[in-house]
Length: 172
Image 1 (tube, rainbow, N blue to C red):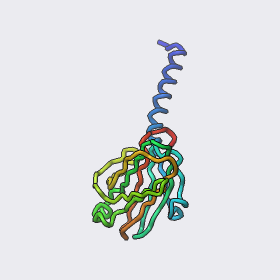
Image 2: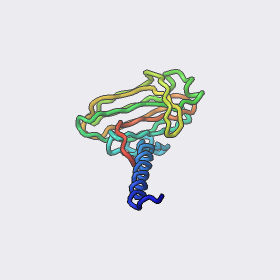
Image 3: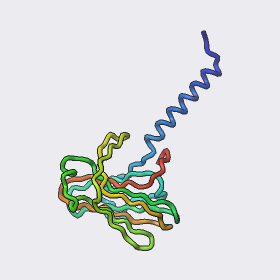
């Protein structure tokens, strides 16, 4: 029995759409790598829409190191940021006062410091990586550019991750 050509075409298009939709979700959480050149927010990258889900990675090898970036919002948007670390044996054993901290400076100059307030495990299935949530910030954003700075407080190597935004948008 031979299928009519239009049915084959419909099945092919349906499969193509299904596959492209499922792979779009996997790529939606854009990874931003903060390097040793990004030591201040002014030197770091700019994220133009702070509502789109992104993960900014900062690898530290010693105490006192810092990495920065800038994130833009419009008035009234929801600002969501999270501080996580990779769940490695050495990093997970660090006391709270030796774990990275996150400073978020609003467009009006007000600042919030996020230090460890939790240690919640999280497995990220797309990368197959285990993380530990350390702190979360959720508030209404001011219009403008936020300055974000993550700092290491230990000589133990650790990868800090700043989770930014909440909207999963393919290609971002």
